[in-house]
Image 1 (tube, each protein chain N blue to C red):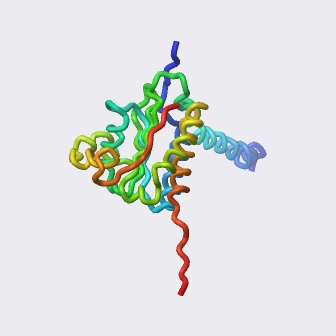
Image 2: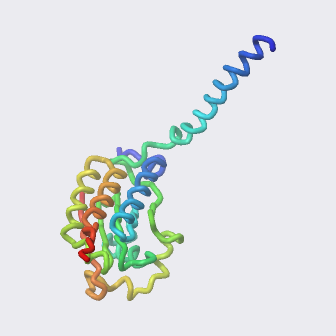
Image 3: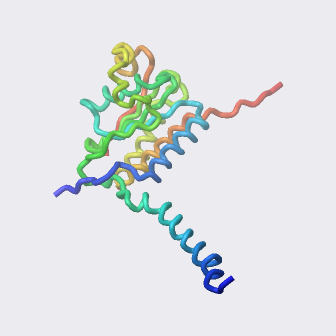
Length: 85
Length: 130
């Protein structure tokens, strides 16, 4: 095997693959912004973690009776609290 | 002039952290946790209640609603969830979230809130006496 071929197979190809894989891993997160920062105007789409598959649209299909009861209505014993920052 | 957020509210790393916090909280407390981050449609509390009612199991669900433009955080607990997580404990978790949000850490505040709520809701282990 010519010395150049050995160099190519043993060092250059692995190094090239390493670079390509590293770029593929880090590029998506580098393209992202830092997320929402205080003082910015909110332009983000609502995000619902652990919510129904339909997202916010699901609330239109909810029975009004199920919404009206609770801490403020008393029936289901719903609770919670609020805060402002 | 106010800066405008150019991308999503959370990075993929932050999203993964919130997902993990929710999964851990559900394991610890046996309650369902859900987090909504975004602008409220109308008054925040009634909106949060509508979101909570739309969940799969509202009675044993805990919903955190964070409205960044209005700077309001709401927590709604279902009837069953409230038995192990009273309103005073919810207020403590909200305090923790408020301080993180005020410091500009939206994702960290959400994670901390979920963790605190789960810790408060964690039931003591039953020991068999026989």
